[in-house]
Length: 149
Image (tube, rainbow, N blue to C red):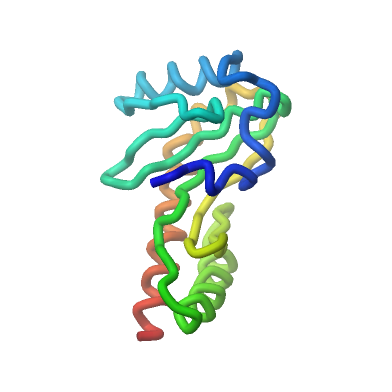
């Protein structure tokens, strides 16, 4: 999977950060402590796997309060009919789940959670729930797509 296709999702990642920074280190340390194996991608964001899915945790060093997890390209779009169905399913998943967004980006469907915290460390107690919300929105999307087949 090529993550850079999704570079502009969520506000631009680690803009100007050069792949190193305080949030990147904090996120990486946290992910490791939770049992994940994060890797820094070429854009300076953290890529990690959860049950076979590849997720991105954007560092956003230029925006300390912003927090964003992305599940890029979890559903490839293979036809124009499927694209139309994906827009409907994405709207349904976004409208019926808390916090998560599901959207069509080029020929793929992505899901994300974006939040603002007064202190960047405040993501820690809600990380698992945020990840669960992304996964829940993906499940709602997939269910709606199966209904349309």
